[in-house]
Length: 375
Ligand code: AMP
Ligand code: TRP
Image 1: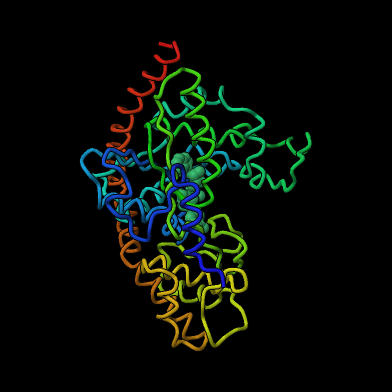
Image 2 (image 1 turned 180 degrees about the vertical axis):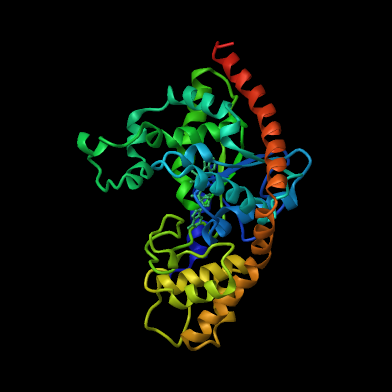
């Protein structure tokens, strides 16, 4: 049986300077007193349990623990979202609003964190251009996301394959690096699927610093939670994702209790029906559910295994899991519903967040231009 705890300790020791595994509950010492923490989500629909446990619950924890000299910036990556085939404008507006309401519904406090829309801070695009002059096509070519989003599943990509791939999708990770570096961010809380983009960000920070003999950009640390990868309920080979054609595998933060129960009851498991324990290799479906419970309850896997050691049938196991998820999402669900009825409030929050973000971005881009002789 593969114990996740052992694997994580090994991993975090090797990469301690660039990738940091935080515990289930963030603790005051995890993030330095003068840190700038930055992260965003794409407005491609409502938040799901993966977004919540992988990233955004940590944003709330960071707000709760915020110290005076720390800066927290969380945003809606609407410029990234337009790299997918063009969508209905009304729906896109709704998705942006839902993303904002989702961030706030998690408990992110707009008094403590700047909450903004990427497209309203033009310096993101400006720095994107600057960084694109540092980024090699070879590096971008090796990255996986543009290939998977373009349905290309091989290493040697032909000209025909490239035919319809847009430059914006190819250069998506450079814009992400610009987002992060624009605020001179030191810590970036994200899920596992973003680690490749963060590696590029670090390379670009170092390359810029080396080129201009400066230490202007901090080298940002990726912060990952123990639940950095939540899997689809009905295909535990894939991560839980908004774009999954099979939506039964995705639990949304605002799903009603009955919907959650139905989805958990249909979750793909296995035929060992009298014992429930974590074994990611041989029992991925059951392990994913245990992982979700451990994330929600902020308890190590062995503790959860102890808690469920008396359960000896799937009906009870799934009831146990459903009830824990339903309870956890009760407040975000209520908040989300309320916030979606308060568009003026949402607008006032994001207007103020945009203003605060722009003030930082303007100063920093001026400094960057000065360093580069562009002033
Ligand atoms: P996205 O919805 O793709 O913009 O993702 C927003 C945040 O949630 C990012 O930090 C992702 O890494 C994280 N995330 C997305 N899906 C999952 C998942 N299935 N498990 C854990 N984290 C996830
Ligand atoms: N690419 C991220 C995602 O799909 C969203 C994102 C855009 C982001 N810019 C970022 C995350 C900067 C962290 C930091 O979830």
